[in-house]
Amino acid sequence: MTAAPVTPPAPPALRPRRPLRTAQDRRLQRRRWLTYALVGVSSVLMVNALVGDTGYLATLRARRDHDALVQSLIQIRQENLDLQEKARLLKEDPAALEEAARRELGLTRPGEVLVIVTEPPRPATSR
Image (tube, helix red, strand yellow):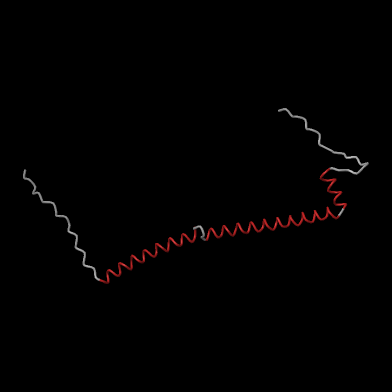
């Protein structure tokens, strides 16, 4: 048996040396990094403008809350006007005062009999 010739391992591949950069290459490299930086900063600013504390979504939420508060204020003002009208009627109109006394206090005139009708209690059902 003859031994197969052993071949030595191949030397590691040599990396070619980088060519020396010219002034134009350095300018292009700087411009590329500047472009990446501007895109990154612009992206951060756009996200902040959309979801930040004073961003677009916060503005929409504030407008919705403002509209709800305005509607609530309109309703409260209307209730206030109604109560002022009711107070005026109670001060000036004796019939309105009598009706309110009968309805809310259960008062009667002399000689009237007050009858209170209640529902009878329901019988307990067994199961």
